[in-house]
Structures are given as C-alpha cells and as structure tokens.
Length: 370
Ligand code: NAD
Ligand code: IPM
Ligand code: MN
Image 1 (spheres, rainbow, N blue to C red):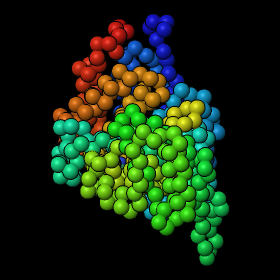
Image 2: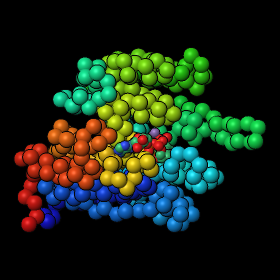
Image 3: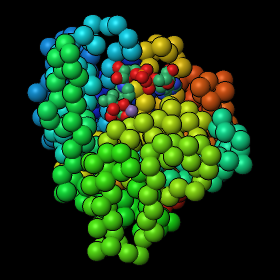
Image 4: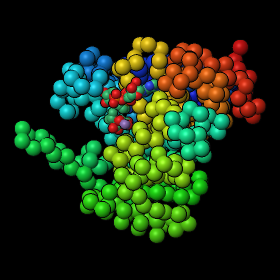
C-alpha cells in the first residue's frame, strides 16, 4: 500500500433485523471498491439499537457514542423492533431504540439530513407511478434533524394528557435554510419550503425566518412555499417539479418515506446527516422485521448512503460516482424483489461487486494491491 493512500476510520452500526443484512452487503461492496479507488478503510462495528439494549441495558452505549465521535464517519444500518406490542416498545422513552437513534444524531450535532430522491433515467419502470409521471424526478429533501417536535420540551404524558412540544429557535431555522439554499445553488436553483403556517405558529415562524434568510443572502435562488398536506399530494402528482425541499423534522420524516416510493421502494433511499464534526450515513428505512433473515432486504439505500459518505465525508467523488453507477447497473439488470425483480440481497450485492470494475473511471482507478 502506498504511503499517501488515505485510510478512513468508519464506525459501523449494523443495528437490528435487516440492519446487519444491508450493512454486510455494503461492507462487502466497500471493501471491493476501496483498493480499486485508491484508499483504505478501517471499519469497526459497534453495538447499537435493540440488540445493544439487550446486551448492555442501553440502545446507544457510551462506548459506541465515543467511537462514533472519534471516527471519520458513521455508517448505520437500521435499528428498532417490530411495530406493535413488543418489549422494546414498552421501555421508558429514554431507553427506546428510537431514542438511541435521536441521541446519536444530537450527540454528533448532525442537524441537516439530506435525502436525495432520484428516478434514474431508464429505470422509470420501477416506479409504482406512471413512467411519464416518475420520469425526471431528481429532488433533494433537506430535513431538519435535531430540533422541532422530536426534541421539544416539555414532553410528557400523564394518564389523562399527552404532550409533545414543537419548537424551533431562529438559529436552527436559519442554518437549515442555508443548507437548502446552498444545495440549490449547486442544483437547479429552486427551494420549496414546506410547512403548516396556516395552522401552526411554529410553522409561521419557520416561514418568516426562511424568507428572511432568502431575502438577505440568497435572492438568486427561487423560493416558494407549500403547506405540507398539499406538498404530499404534489409529490405524487408531479414529483419532477421539485428541486430542493426544506422542511422541519417531522414533516421531513413523513414526506421522505412517501418520496422514496417514487423511484420504486423505501429500500432505495439513502441519507447523509451533516452539520456536525462527523457525518452520519444511513438508509431512510427501518429495520423491517417482517422480511429479516429472508435474503429479501434491498441494500440500495445503504449502498447509496455509503456513496454519500464517500462524496460528502471523504471527497472521494470518483469512487462515489462509481458506486452509484454500479448500483444503477445492477438495478437495470435485475433488481431486488421489493422492486419486482428476482434477486435476493446476496445476489444483488454480488451483481454490484461484478459491475464495479466496469464503472471505475481510469482517473480514479489505481493499481489494486496484489
Ligand atoms: P420499515 O421501514 O422498517 O418497514 C416498512 C416497510 O418497508 C416494511 O414492509 C418493510 O419490509 C419494507 N422495507 C423497509 N426497508 C426495506 C428494504 N431495505 N428492502 C425491502 N423492503 C423494505 O418501517 P416500520 O415497519 O414502520 O418500522 C420498523 C422498525 O424500524 C421500528 O422499530 C421503527 O422505529 C424502526 N425504524 C428505524 C429507522 C432507523 O434505524 N433509522 C428508520 C425507520 C424506522
Ligand atoms: C427515520 C426514522 C427515525 C425518525 C425514527 C426511527 C427515530 O423514521 O430515520 O426516518 O423518525 O427520524
Ligand atoms: Mn422515517
């Protein structure tokens, strides 16, 4: 290995159910890609999620938190138990798996969650929408990730009252708006801010702050506003109209699951959570206990999250492009079953590995070690 070959330390959190399956697939591909693209990876797995709770009494153990903060990037699968009556869902809020996920995001300070939604040209047939509706979809959902109703206080239930608080500070809206405007400048120059300002004070505040940032710093970017209910409808009716969507934590969670199905499946969508010292990369789907252990998990969301890690975290643009191209090639040949294809997780992963040598550009490729 040459002396100037960079080595990136990645904290890998497989999580629960299909989490380890999509992570194993992604690690297999990354280990094939790295030497060909001229860098090395030091991958360290750490306990996280329901399994970590069972083993150590907490879904986000201190050692895992520390390892994540000290790494160059965090790559996560997905964590959580079956929806419905399950022991993990009866734990006190602070010990629930989902609180471990939120705790990690907050700990890393990753307030900007980028969720790109792209219908690859030629793969329109994978969409449940008519091909002419899905065609041209290429949007970036910028979801605020460390504020809003997910974290607002007070938050507590009594036998007679449930309470969560939706709150945004000015600096939180300003910084996420800037992320969206900056992203739009590198794309098609259009931002749609999604809120519920017709009903919620916190949303009117959001809108006013976004407008203020726009007027004072980003007048060159086109800005419009949609109420979240209409935005949900427009996403299905005319997805290709969107460039960058910026929205609050809860709205972004809901709209991104909806948007994931435009290219074909929840299993396709990646994310990068940025803004802190270490980036967090994870697919947007959950742990899918219904299909775990059956070789049915679509690893594409995690593979594309790894591509975002290479691009945003390590500036390895050529390797990121190659990984995305290999995934696209494998999807075009024969996708996973959730997309109507015949491949299981393992066969799909092998197809991505097979495609790699064909998509690594000469400029990126360096001699693989013997
Ligand atoms: P889910 O995303 O796990 O599953 C929803 C549906 O999509 C299921 O039918 C599932 O089989 C399918 N699906 C999801 N990912 C898929 C993939 N990669 N390939 C093929 N099909 C896939 O959502 P849920 O059922 O509401 O939640 C299950 C658990 O996951 C819960 O405990 C929830 O809190 C947790 N969760 C975790 C994360 C995370 O780790 N970031 C995200 C969302 C949900
Ligand atoms: C996601 C998930 C999480 C969220 C949950 C599991 C905490 O749904 O990453 O989209 O709501 O943010
Ligand atoms: Mn979600």
